Length: 351
Image (cartoon, rainbow, N blue to C red):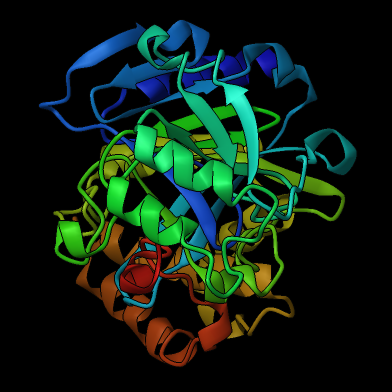
């Protein structure tokens, strides 16, 4: 598996339509590429790519310890679904420092660009299980403010550190046992019109952090594993900004291959049962699955088959699929639905 996984990650890093993240539930750094990006490091074979807006480096040496979990999520929009690959380590191997206060770490000698390696790294002290969420500081005034507040929580009343960070827009650096994501663009907020910049960006969402979770409940991560990085291959139903696109059959098939290699067997078997029933004309025998994961697979299989049927001329098949969608997908439980771009709906309240 490690060699196959390395090939997958390397190829996906070259695809500008794929996205990446390192984060937890409520604190995340996302690396996205755009056609006009200027590359400063282009080494996908080393799982290393940097643009003028941000970058990512994953540890190729640790892939033999990675359990990759490919998954699909249920979108709130009935014609869509999400997809991704969680790169997981066993809990002990994936744990971070879990610092709970602002902490100076010194010069960032591991920075992705040599020009940033003398700048000072501060752990923001978010106390997350599998990541250290940091800022990297060059500005003398911000450096003075943060050093004066070292050892305090950023959320402590009267602490000026967070306001200074939001004003100065330092680089954000999100670290896990599998690598790092760096963000050079401004922090989403008043200086960016209240939204995150297009491309690489971060979210720190206090409401989600208070849940104390390592990942969304809609990601089927087995107990005992920690997701230390994520890959989001190009979606067949939406673009990188979350807008609808004409259905891309090639992207759909590409991810189904990934799902077969790295997906949960019970999810795959549920989807296959739907396809077999449609093929045999026995869909009237289908019933609501008994677990969240299987229900997600069931509904996504119907959504996907509806999009595929729309490409052909078999109107009878399309009618049968839509009858099943009305029966099983109309009232999907809210807690089993994942936002298409997690965090973006709340970014006005985040960092």
